[in-house]
Image (cartoon, rainbow, N blue to C red; front, side, top):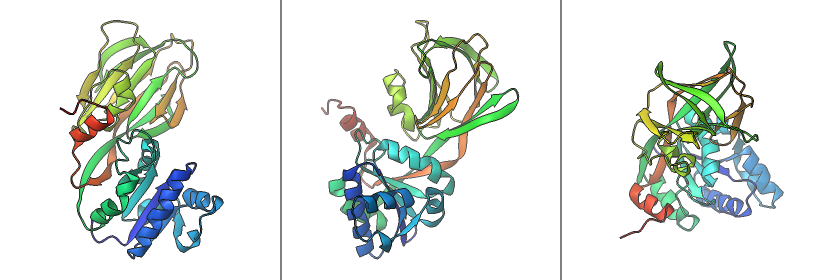
Length: 296
């Protein structure tokens, strides 16, 4: 990043601790002579909770923030960063997460350390990672009826009905298998430590250019996760044998209804997310800490 003069701030607006952190962070940035752009929803939440001087900051939507800010700070959990990433990735703006959630794989800055670490980033001491997203289209009778993008994963699942889904998987026009299962997780390396990990998928280093296909509770003992090249074109076909209407979820936040005969096309998004970390971050130390591995 070149010299930073404008920083965007997005907060978990339903969380009091996150709003406290946002307020303190904005004051710190202002004291450094940085122009702050508050996300409009975050600014409204600050006003509602009695925080003063919000009128001293610019406000914008996430899309406008992506066009104006040179750095965006997201205060919340990984879900908050996932939500922001889908909007900001298309604008090529660097994003850094300050953890006011639970696990914090993506929002890896602790609030107690945020002033010193934000200052380090503003002074040019940081590590930048390029994380790719995946995008999907739902095709019904030859027409696109839905679309979405995800930093973590795109998941075919049952919705609310406890019946298996029958579907076919094709990669680069090569038939892989027909499956009866609770669904399948199509995960990026970023998402390999999220839902896919709980379903028995592999942990992939974030720099790997690959996608994992992780079946969920398949009706066969031979079904195993598959790791494929990141540039693969994936197609999921909802077979006509289904009596249920499954759903497609992007990062667990965008939900698309499906019907028998639908085709889901999944591929890597052209734009990548610039994710900022402290300059001394160690990915394997993060894994040990978050997954509570033995440190010996």
